[in-house]
Length: 262
Ligand code: MN
Image (cartoon, helix red, strand yellow):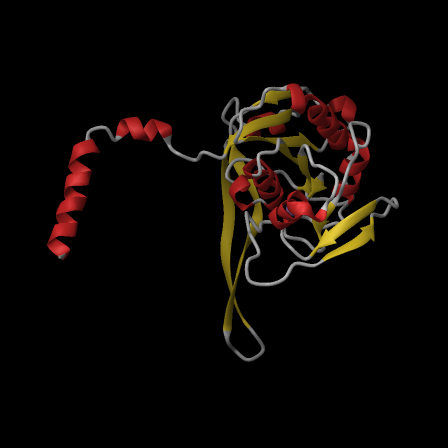
């Protein structure tokens, strides 16, 4: 199953679906509008609509009023009758590197699949140009997807794939990476509406990043396809060891605070 966060009309989605047809049968269920940076957003208080549409190349698809993760949930829970064995989300217009994954609807679609127990990958192209060539990234996604079922992926782990916006012959290889650190350049813009009331816009230049070796940011900067395994378990396991000295102190203090409140 293919979904995305840029909406069902995105050329990245169409290129992905076309390339994946060389791997297996493909069902498309994607949002009917752009949900970029919507994060992992679940619709709970309004109905979800699903319509039959066609992609620009004629591919039959389903478009939902819901978010990327809603699309995956709808498909897995029965809107798509064919059994779903894995989910690919993308190809996003713009990289999802470092902390971007916490904002990303593309990654959220893959996370929703992982929560459902399905293998999943998110695929993003390092270009904000919707007319970019998604062909190389689509072939990369197909190759990784074909390898996924036998790859022995641990449950609760998805793959976040970022592809440099380069011609296929100029890609410098593929490497496993860890998440890097994005540097955001957000600025607060304060303007006034026609009634004189202030409004705010969080804007600024596209994010940069610290190019530490072995990170996704480093790999894409060096022309390489980056594959980052992402665990849904966000526990800071190292921290659990670091807080050993607190092990007795903190529960005692919490208990004392509760006693004093009685
Ligand atoms: Mn997007």
